[in-house]
Each structure stands twice: as structure tokens, then as C-alpha cells.
Image 1 (cartoon, rainbow, N blue to C red):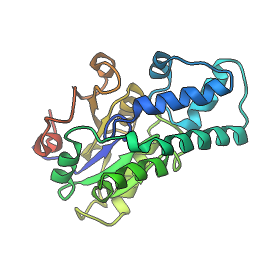
Image 2: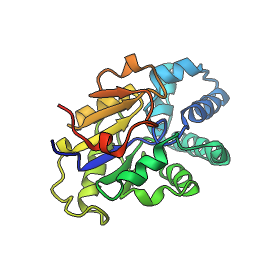
Image 3: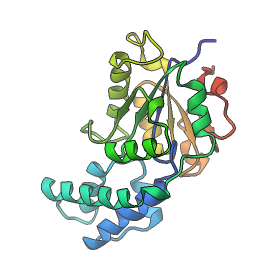
Image 4: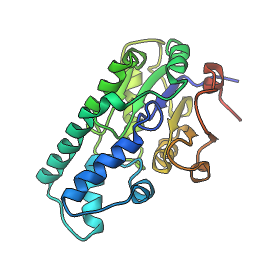
Length: 231
């Protein structure tokens, strides 16, 4: 059976253990605006939604408008608070070894709803940035997950960006595996025509059943197992 030619990783909740910090800061920024969300509210309605879409969504839910300039300020405020806490963030157990095992045999991308500078800061801090051929973040796409835009943009970059392996210019969605942790992310992957492996780090496995496969952790998954296409 043929292997996948590319693996597209979500970042928060997949590569790095960041979801709880993002939730806390997002809710704190909203609280200053008089909008209060619980952690459960966030996980049920905002997990996998990027900040550019998340802040307007939160305002709409309470019947308020958020003009684009104020939205930009809130996104920047949250990003600044996150940067101050990035020393708390660690990659998930097993992820560095997994990336080392596969980075020279398939094209690797980050396709995330996080900010680009936030992703790169964590990857650099843990010496993981060099594994990825491209990073597509919320800064590069106009629509958030569950729309497929971030994965389709990453696919296009993998076709054109230099780096191992060669000959990805003909890469198709069917040859890509997405690794996700949220229902919105799984739906985005499937909308892009890609297979999806979901990791139950942020929500229960029962909430990820639209994925092709669900695991509790990447810690015990070998590179060979990840690359092997099933079915």
C-alpha cells in the first residue's frame, strides 16, 4: 500500500500543548470587553476557530458588532499575552521524535488557525522549525476552519516550496494526511479532500468520529504507522 506523501499538522493541541493557554487568554481578553465564556463554552464553540473569526463570533453571540479595527486590536492583544507565556508551552510527548523520523521522507506542513509568529516562536524554542517545509497560519487565509482554506493553501505551498522530499509538484489532496485535534479541524480536512487522523488531546474521542482514525496520543505512533495509508 502506498504511503502518504505529505503530513499536514495542526499546531495547537497537536504539536504543542497550547489549547488551555489559548482558551484562558482568549476568555480573559473577552472578559475585559464584558463578554464572559467558560472553558466549556470555548471548547464547544471556539475550538479550532482562529482569532480573526473567533472575536467577531463572540461579539455576535451577545448581539454586538465588532468593527475590523477593534477586532485587529483584540487579536494583537491576545497574541502579545500569549508571547509572554510561551515559555510554558511544551511539545507533546513523542512529537519531536516523530517529526525527526518522517521529515526527510514526506513533505511536512503546519496548517493552523494560530498566528504565524506564535507558531514559529514555539517551534524555534524547541528546535522543531527545520522539520517543516511550510507554515500556513491564520495570517495567510481569510476563512477559518471548518472551511478548508488553510489546508488547501498548505498543499499549494508544499507543491512549490523547496525542501525534502523532491517532486511534490504533483501532490494531490488524496496523498495528504491531516493531523487534527478539533471537530472543526477534522471537518476542514475532509472538506479539503484529505484523510484525517484526530488526536483526542482537546476533546473526547467521541467528538472526533468524522475523522478517518482517532488516537488518544501521538506518543506511541511510529513514523511508519503515521505514513501508512489505511483502507
